[in-house]
Structures are given as structure tokens and as C-alpha cells.
Amino acid sequence: MLMLVLVLDSKSFTYVPNLFGRISKETNRSEGSVPAMGMERVQCGYASLDETFEIGKEMYQGQQYSQIYFARLHLMRTFLYSLVPHWKPNFPVCTVLQLEEGKECVIVGTLYKHMKLKPCILDEYSKQRSVVPLVKPHNFMHPDDHLVLEDESGRVKLGGSIILPSEYVTGIVVALLGKESGAGDFLVLDVLDAGLPPQIQFPLKSRQDKYVVLVSGLSVGSSSSNPLQFQLLIDHITGHLGDEKEQSIASQIVRVVFAGNLVEIPRRFLNGQNLASKDLSRMAEPVKELDILLSQIAAGLPLDIMPGPSDPANFSLPQQSLHRCLFPGSSAYNTFRSCTNPHCFELDSVRFLGTSGQNVDDLEKYSEAKDKLEFLERTLRWRHLAPTAPNTLGCYPYTDRDPFFIERCPHVYFAGNQDKFETRVIKGSEGQLVRLICVPKFSETGVAVMLNLRDLECHALSFGTQFSS
Image 1: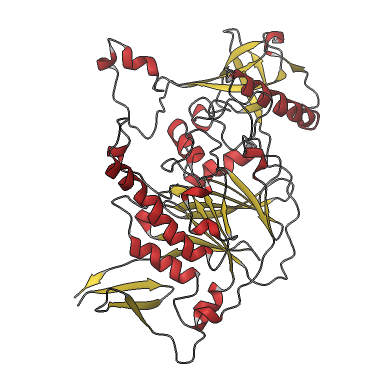
Image 2: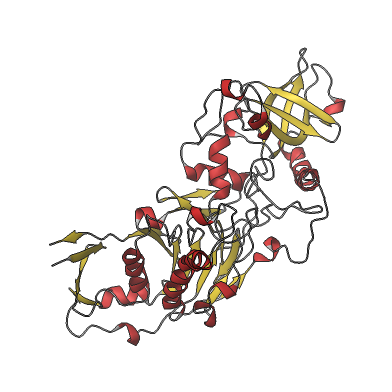
């Protein structure tokens, strides 16, 4: 006999396939436990804040990406100028063109990182491309990398050991204290980042437990996807698994958020060639399967879905919401919401901000950190969700605004499709508290994240299957 065993929170659930192909459940719960359909689910206030990331009726009319950099510089420079009198009150503020040799001053501008190993499209057409050294695809750092600061008046190479090229990327706006050297470089003596944005007050802790489940990287249709594993997750959060205590906790789940890479379309269908009708049908199978699975959740509790790199959505950030027609079953419920990536929302005045992971993955290619959470923390302190966009991360060519600027500090900041589950709390200079979360790929790890709105404590939900005879 084939047997599937799930180990979850020190409880085991045994699944025995019956003769009719359905799955019957034999659990270790006590007699008289409350069935799933008898639960009364906890309610929670919800507000979507995705308007900033919605492109709407904006049209591309040949505009250049320089305009988004100008918008970013203008916005951030105005803010940094307001901080300089409290940071370095006794030093003048200059532009790059006004620098004088040996004179200490403060300059504000956008960082550009000159990288020796940064990929260039022109290299593909170079006759000497074969002599270019092989680079590890996950990181393009080199000891000879250096930083340049530029504003509208000019640019200057940065020197000194205060500002390390390994920690910064192109696109960040900073204020620097230093002086011009005889060689024409700007010797940096101190650095001022924007710091964590102001944060709305966290609601009082004397509330009941309410949970949010974060999942990413389902990759339905891929070779690594395990439908049974996902079904176990669905049964758990909808209250169809476990004893009375487990079902009681499940009834306190107020929302499920899927952070990107919901499906994976087979690459053989994406080679640009015309497809036969049977191939078109096969290409849609992962989305149909996902819709069936999501319908089970939407029938019982609210859920948000965000697009990711492998989903049928626009490539560049901000990714627009997946069309509801892709999900005829689950979109029939008013609990179903298709959202943008990045995604910002509030649950009972607790603000969430998250991405499907592209911003963190791109930072890992062009800078270094001890872990992925440090990348998340840096973007908050730089007040920018995707500082490498549009340089190395695709984004829409905005002309008069930068939607990735973080005006309000979230209480929960997450990134999906990471290698493993990581979390910690960081604190800002004005008392801001932020829970950082790396949500792992569910198809590879079988791990989802459960967060308590009452105190922002979170833990992993691990789902595993094994066959025994």
C-alpha cells in the first residue's frame, strides 16, 4: 500500500488512497472535534494601496529612461537637503561643478556603479567575445568596481573607504561629505542615506490573533511542482486538516497572499513559433490547474495573487495584475483579488509591502550582503523598492514620477521566490519596527509563512510528502 505522511507542527496526517481514486483522511484528532464546515472565520478590514503601481492609461511614446532618474533625483534630493542642516550644519552644500580642491562640502546626487563584469548587449556582437572571462551568473562583482556620483551639472569619481562599492548599486540617491582630491576624485568622509520612512502607528496589541499566510513559487506545471503538497496546504488553511486546535487556528487565517511565480509555462511553447491547437491547449493547462486549486481557497477565505517572472504578465516592473479571465473559477468569488507586483495593502491598519522577489534577486547580482534580508533592509533605508531599475531591472519608462519611492514605512516587508525562509525585525531611528520576510519557493521547499497580525510574529509552515509501502 502506498502511504503519504505529512508532518506539520508535530502532528502526523496519514493519507490512504481508496479504491475510487479519492483521498480519505485518517487523522489523530480526538472524537467529537469540530468539522471544517462548522468554523466561523475571523473577519479583517482590508485596503488595497496598489494605485501607485497601476500604469492605467499611460502610453509609451518613445520617452527615455533618463526621465525617471531625474524624477527620482529631484524627489530624493529635496528630502536629503532637509536633513543636511541636522547632519552636517557647518558645511556648505555644493553641486559637482562647484567642487574645489581641498574644500570640504556636502554633495547630493545619484550613484552610478562602474562594473567591469557587468553584462553588455554589445558583447554579443564583439569579435573578441570569446576572450571575455566567464562570469558566475549569480553575481558580477569585481575588485576593480568603483562608484561615481552625478547630478545635472556633472559627475565625479568617489574615493576612500567610507563608501564601499560592494554595498551600493546604480540608482541610489545619497548625500556625501568629503572633498575633492588633487587627482580629481571626491574623497568621501561620511554618507547620509534617506533612512526608514515615517511609519503609521502600529495598532494596539490587545487584539485577537489573526493570521496571514504568505506563499510564493507554486510553479504549477513545472517538474518541481507537487500537486499533493499544494493540496495539503489548501486543506490546512481551509480547516480540513487537523484536530480541533488546528482547525481553530485555521479559522483565524484572514488572508492568503501568493507572491509570484504561480505557474510555469513549458519553455518549448515559448520559442516564438506558431503553435498547433493541441499545443495551445497544453500551454493553458497550468493556468487551468491553478484556477481549480485557487477556487478551493477563494470559497473559504480572501486571497491575493501577485504576478512573477514566470507568470503570463508583463515582464517589466511594476507588473500589472493578471487578468481575471485567466481564472474563471476562482474569480467568481468576491474573495479573489488579482494584484500588482509590487503589492501594497493594509489589514486592520497593519501595512504590508511586498514583491515577487525580482528587486532582491537583482541586488544580489550587483552587490553583496550577508543574507537576502539585508538587501530588503537596504531598500527600506534607501527608500526605494527597486534601485537597480531601470539600469539592470526592467521597468516602465515613467516621465514625471518614480512609483518605487517608499513614502510610508510598512510594518511587514516581504520578498517572494527566495531560496529559504528568513525573517527578522529591524528598527528605525524614529522607532519604526518592520518585520522582514523572505518567502521561499513552495515548489522546491514545501514551506509557506504564517504571520500573526497581533504582534507580527511569524513562523514557517512546512509540508512534506513521502511514500512508504
